[in-house]
Length: 89
Image 1 (tube, rainbow, N blue to C red):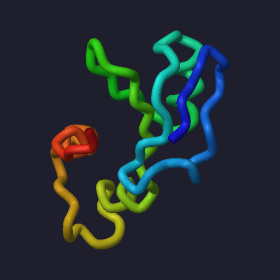
Image 2 (image 1 turned 180 degrees about the vertical axis):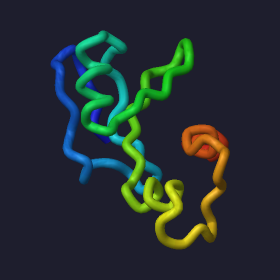
Image 3 (image 1 turned 90 degrees about the vertical axis):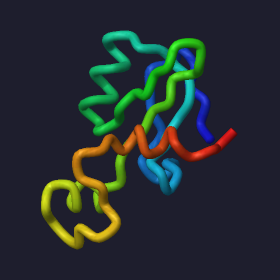
């Protein structure tokens, strides 16, 4: 797992877990958020916990937009909500 510091960067998509978790830590500065959103990376923040940076796999995005098989994809529910329901701790 990649832990971010104050340096403004993100690891390549290949570092993401199967669930889309790419990195932990960093900050929510405007510059980091712009870099993240332009790169298809999204923060998941809960007060008192480290920031999780996620990048959904393209296959999930295609399924959500109507491409490919819809089997196993829950439309209308947040991918990150589903992620938080799993016990990783």
